[in-house]
Length: 220
Ligand SMILES: C[S@@+](CC[C@H](N)C(=O)[O-])C[C@H]1O[C@@H](n2cnc3c(N)ncnc32)[C@H](O)[C@@H]1O
Image (cartoon, rainbow, N blue to C red; front, side, top):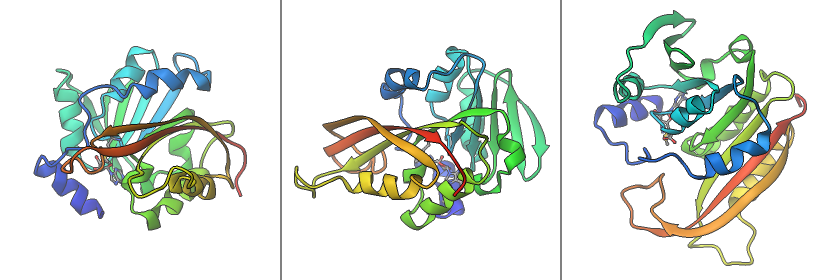
């Protein structure tokens, strides 16, 4: 989906992907990263996700990246917070206390922007991108990341069309996308019947949710 189409979705309030609760897999699996309060978490393609509030409540600093100023404005307004705004390169940085949300295109991030980031939380970011852009996303981040950074990746896949014995397509895609730069560990896999957050207009179906922990090791 093009940047303009995402912005239009926000303009038309077509945001069925937005979850009205904190993703329960976040508090369950984030402790596996062994981070400490005060560390900075990057949340790419953040929308107005409530998960960012969970990070703040746990004492983390948050940098979200989001194309739509409508999403960012809503995030702060829904918490009765008035952020400051300033230009930062090609981004407009909205900031209040420990949270910054940068309005702009993730692909405009530079190495300097990521200095001081300890971990990345990817929930519906990689999978929001068209398949042909995903390698560009992983490569773009990987060529700029500080050493030792970790990534928690949450994926949801419809498995209606897969037999139980078949290896998950997502598993192989995740491995091929990330393994040049990260060690990849599958922390969790669970099948459930619910509405796919990426296709909120469709009815509930069989989904497989997965959580991966990644440790950045080198630039390929
Ligand atoms: C599927 S939504 C997920 C939002 C959020 N992660 C969540 O779980 O609610 C994808 C979000 O990424 C934003 N987005 C898409 N492409 C982007 C890009 N290149 N740079 C920054 N944000 C982008 C969209 O505007 C949208 O809010």
